[in-house]
Amino acid sequence: MNGEAEMDSLISVSSVEMGGVQAVADGDSVFMDLTPAGVEGVKAPSKYDVWVERDTEFNPDPTRAVWMSALFPGVGQIYNRRYWKLPIIIGGYLGLAYATSWNNGMLTDYTRAYRDIMDNDPSTNSYMNFFPPTTEEADLDRTWLTNVLQSRKNYFRRNRDLCIIAMVGVYLLAMVDAYVDASLSHFDISPDLSMDVSPTLFQEVRGMKPAVGINWAITF
Image (tube, rainbow, N blue to C red):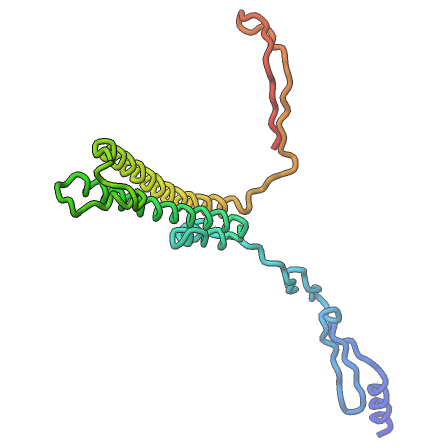
């Protein structure tokens, strides 16, 4: 009996090392330290096991940028986050659209006037709308007026067609710009990029006389 009591008292105030696991007896309870540092053969967590929040880097897709720009001019630039290009593209597109509409309206008026002066119906004289109300039709030179109306008709047709071509050009240019901008968004421009140009003297090679030239070196 006395031996068992002494053994219980020793266990209650001592700790026992068991295979790298530290067990501490306190009365009727046993606590075990299972921390990684206290277990033999267990390594500390590496940096790859620890979650580190990182800033996400925007990486635009060139194909998506082209399709978004094809949907409407300027959308591809918004997708690429090049907002400063949006007023240029939209302003140019709207300006050309207004010029196309205006030239087309003038072309319609001069085409009608030229058609009226070429027929033999005296009731169709829309060309008189280009003159003040006090102007008499009999006082006009019909040959001169016919040439003027034909020349103006061709002039406004050419301007309208050029505006339409320019609108198509702006549309295609916006698509190309969106694609190139997305492709070069992560182009590495090193501060070591340089080019050194200096005069040099070329020595005699294969029977040729020495010559003066330019030597350049590109560092990248």
